[in-house]
Length: 332
Image 1 (cartoon, rainbow, N blue to C red):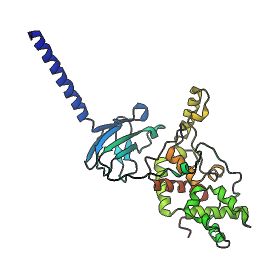
Image 2 (cartoon, helix red, strand yellow):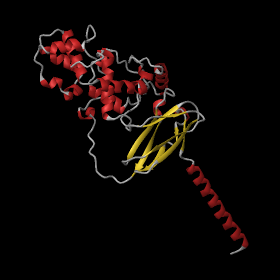
Image 3 (cartoon, one colour):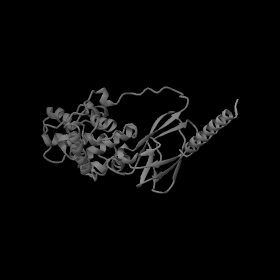
Image 4 (cartoon, rainbow, N blue to C red):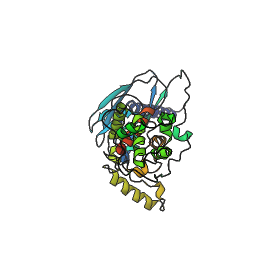
């Protein structure tokens, strides 16, 4: 081997060692996760590897505004991430799988895009059978816009409904949770047409039936979820007038102009849950499916990987309370 060949090989080995060293250095810093508004990249990195039973220590910093970190479907406190500051959390997973982490602060109109995954590897102790969502079993078209043919003349009262229901013979299926989830308020109103009650009285009974399918604890959970995750678009009172509603409308108009007029694929203004024409036409299964799956191109995010099933039902029950105006105590 000539002297020049030895020098060349030494240089190649040196470069490889240095390159490997740089790679290891950068990966050793990967535990510091940068948070940026979605337009600037969101989470970096946005894919994290972990092992079952082994603590996962994460550090965060924000490169722009205040963000928050939480892992979907896990009862963990959120981590506040401030610009220029370091926040830390240590997680330990007891089950393998893919977990979604997300930003908990309303950092902009595309806030909902700020998500990442934690890929947890480990041995599965059992195989869990996952049932399809109810809207899939019922073959509901979540993109179909429904309207109730008629709506109440006045706000229905669950208190009056309780009094009325004691005077009539009601089919047992009408008071079951299964029936409630599969049918819209208007469908139940129509079912009650066989009674001699007036339309307003039938609506009062519907309000009572919807009230009995939730609890004060469930409504409070729904209220908290709505305030943190929905109010910025749909408004504090559910009227579709949140702080980002105008931005969504502008984004939708721009998208419509750049997509050959295909309006159905553009962002849309948030739904108004105080409008009885739409709310009373939709079943709990439909609303749960809409929240779980998202709006498919409308700007409505999917929450199926964030909320537990019970949280989804609690949130649905809270949406109906924008119109039915449940009392502050249980109606037994």
